[in-house]
Length: 497
Image 1 (cartoon, one colour):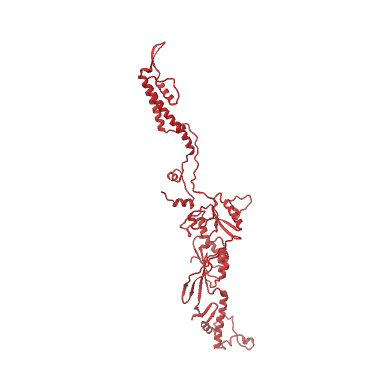
Image 2: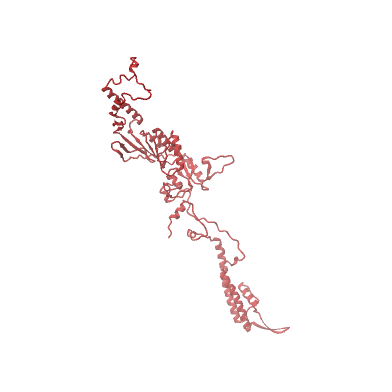
């Protein structure tokens, strides 16, 4: 026993239980109510009515011997809670307190009858009868200080111990110490799903005897009218969010929220004629398996299992694991798992963006080929007599060659750019070199044009990540899922092939 608290009334007990709940909501709590049965009934009734309390984690033990069957009618309209107590009467007999008062009077009457039959004049000089009739008989002083034992007390006690009568609570006998014997106490129990039923018997002769309980399932009232339900939800735009108050406006209760889920809850409540209270989930989680939780789940799913809330209206994904522990309505929105990444930014073309269709290695090879062909053409033209020309001028006859080094470079550049040139080789060797270069430039220009068109098209369509596999293989883009969400659970249990 961890905590002992003396209570004044049921309100005091409820406040104390609420403080316990605020300190630890998840652990199981066993409460012993050592008080009058009516006070105990009020404590349990207030506990059931308090929507903040987690009823499933509480179990009450009432020590009073007067638990009545009217607990069913008094508590079940508001719900139920695990309760164990004791009962001495059958259902058809009067209330226990009345029966005990009747049996106590019956015991006293039986003891005095037997005493007076044996000694009729035992109280002749003690009662006030003689004084009433003015005969001077001494009466009994009930206010004597200090209290002195009565002269007939021990004899009356012996006759009381020898009592053997059958009363409303059963057979009444006492042992040599004055303790009641040969009596039976019924142990009854009320659970979250059953009315109060008998689960065991205890007697001073046989001890505790368990009885197979005949549970009576609590009738489920399917009506929603005039009831208030706790709706758990989570802040998630645009489904549920805090409403911005206007100047001087104070928002309270459900008016503090707005969003799709709030509108949906209002519409359902209006159609079914019930009231509701929106309660944000304590741990800000949707609901995932949690080994540290007593019910194995956290978030909104855990609150539904613990019956901290009656329903959840939120963007909660329907999964097979969740369907094993809670029930879902028809979905109001359907969507699959998607990868959301930032859209790539379009970069402005640079000065050398024309070089993108070909790699740097290709461009280097083209430059080397251009220089090489120009040098070969220059050498061939130098050694071939067909490229020399004899001319007469004012300075006298002279030999000239059109394919100087810079003219050879100009010829190769013009051919590469698909343009003409003023000079052409006349020798066979020069024409062979020129033809090879023309064919080479034809292939290069055709490939460049095709790659340029494809490059511009793919640049607009390509994305860096196209699948979950691409996401897992790269390290540049950081990624993650919402904690305890259905997406995290999906990837946790997924198997890669």
